Image (tube, rainbow, N blue to C red):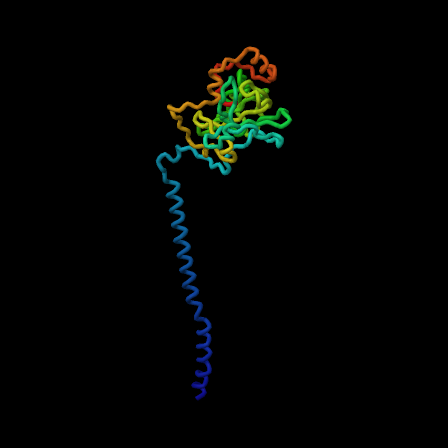
Length: 276
């Protein structure tokens, strides 16, 4: 009887111990499974890295890397003086009759369409004219009707033109950054009525577009321009090509320019095709 009682008193304790330790075996199995899974993943990653290193895509190594430009440069006004305002706007064929009339340039008893923006102050004081975009100076010279002119070449067939300058602070071949001073506003023979002013144009494929439509936009936003061969625009191009400049007027214009600031070069290029 005592042995049976002893066995009865022991067995419940053993059963209780086994019940408490039942989680041990599953935990061990899960641990082994985790180790095996980690080993498989590590092996797969190592094989993948090795394959990537050994791979030799055709032409990949020969291609130049293309930098990603986070913030593309956009057109800015060529003047940052608050006293300077737009005196004469671009001639828009879709504008009102009054707006079109205000955008005409009168020279040699003929009216011409203004192909850019004229900037001036109410007081008539000169002011600095700056590069609207970074680019390369492809022309910097003095011309009979337009005074000192600067042409800057940009990407995508876009050029900016600056004229009616009193002097030049850049030369042909210079690389300028946006905001660099090109010269000071002056006077020209083509648009005497505007007095001291600066003329600014944006051209795509050689044709002028309205600069105000592209301020704060990049050169890629300027659409391609297709010239209609049957269409003849009456603008300052004709004035520049056909005008017979009076020598006396030319001398008067030269007196208003700062000749000392002109770059020392004899330009062999054609006359500027810009507006006033």
